[in-house]
Length: 304
Image (cartoon, rainbow, N blue to C red; front, side, top):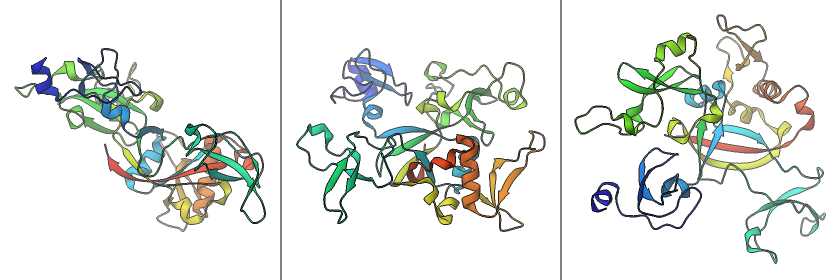
């Protein structure tokens, strides 16, 4: 056991949390891919189990917008909507109920002076994306491939191919690749994947594990608002492009006549129109009519 502790460090005594539990076995973390000492049944290291990180899905156009620095906001529909428009969101700072209720959010109706709650929706909730300072790791369409220099990760959004060694040290003492440390597969040749060869398929973003994510975001602000309350300034922070020949905005939603061989995009008179059209393309025609309350998450990119 001494050799193991010298290699991996001191045994972590943090209490059981999520997929982590203390112990004396050498395991591989299913989130970050690193080895750790813990319980025989532990599937994540303590750092990952205790880290305030959560996954978030983005499509290819939005991934490109993040990489370009155009997108620093995202809007997601709140699961718990208020009973009616007169309700406001409040945070419980003190409670005669269970201690676990403190810090939770709920919808409530206030009197005219906004000094007293006259009706309350008892459904308690928290923001599923975390709080300011927490991190989000991006899930996108991806694949594990083989290249001239060994295993790598390919990303469909911008056709980037990143060698695995940039994510984690998987080399032997002599500098060669230690394939036992590589958590992915590498049967596909990278160029065959991009050429669309038979049997070569991309993996859906929902199946991306933490170790394969190349983009990490830090939350800088969170608020709630009605979807249609978005301003032109904030719509531009959602990632549309300004047209290089006109005052139009768009370039993130494919035109109905667009094809793989001849792609072209929809353009609009304002960034708001571009955002709302993209919203309907994702959530369906007529989805704007509900004008739902949404989480507005503002973020900055911090790396892997």
